[in-house]
Image (cartoon, rainbow, N blue to C red; front, side):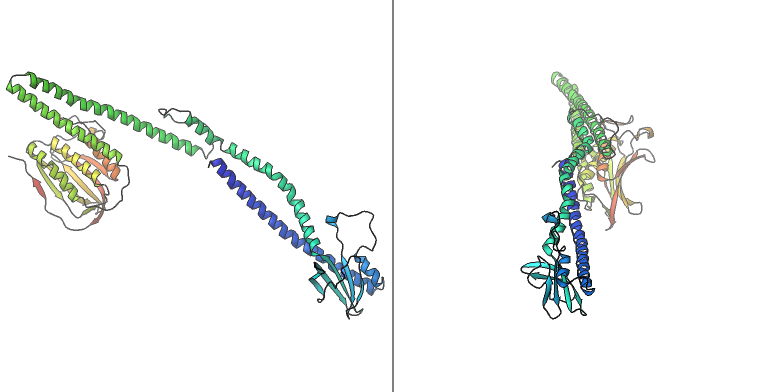
Length: 470
């Protein structure tokens, strides 16, 4: 259902409800006022007849006709809908009929006491006022029919509502047209968007707009800016990834040709060693690209359940043990089990820690040490996972840049791709944590991952170390 139709139906329903309520209220108030006015007329007519008889100004037969208009036909015939004739009966206190007006019913109008009453005579309902004069011994009854009263109220309500009802179609049309004009700014935005191509992500024109539409335009412009930035980032990422993969593949091809064409065993060995390095570099590049894709794709919030991560970190360390031994680097771990992290997506944390350790092992000199420590900080509110190496480190002026994709520090060692720290930084953003890089005392780099710590439980376990092979 369109917004215009929905608003139209809501307004029509609201207008109809108000209209019906007004009609019902008007009818109720009109009935009450008409009832009081007609009752006052009945009582005045009855007292007038009784007064005339008491003053001997008129006999009983003539007195009854006074109420009915004097027994004479007026010069004009009133419309039947507005004809209002009262009926009058004069009874003796003993119960005899002394006189009645023309058109009065044959039966007694009321058998009740003095005052107002409602009775049914000859199958018709009457509203009666009885005035009793004990001195004269008479009871004067003046009445009109309930049907006449209802017709009178209906005529008044019709006279009030009918003109308004005739205006109702015009009101409906005005509401429909007004809604169309009121929603025109949205239609203009829709036309602008529908006329654009999929590649056109320029902001919508910043022109005067209704205050209700401006937040929509600002939101759409913000979305287009973010989408354009994401697309540009993807294009850059694809271009860099293609370049970085192409380089080792070209080296592989060249060294394979050298090994195939050379008859010198030493030359073949050097070519095979270069092929091994290129394969290792390509392997790490592919794994990092897959890690980056996995981290970017994992935008879900998870189930936010606390999870112990020491087992996960132990698995990461075990996977890198052989690499540490081959490089001649000691891998030292100290994982405090008392840290229970708020980490519902351990896969991302594992990717982040593995990339930090791979970077540290690549930068660490032979026979040096890489440490992995997890401990509570900030009075137990957070938990820090620290990776420290004794490599060349990162200059202070490059710390803000090395978390960008394909950016490497000028002191970086090995044939890296510049994706590792970018993956770590993105994973921590997804996890709601933070990555901090600081120069370590005595040289090297300290990388720290900070995540919320749910609780402290259990006790510390002894540190472990992996020594390099001899």
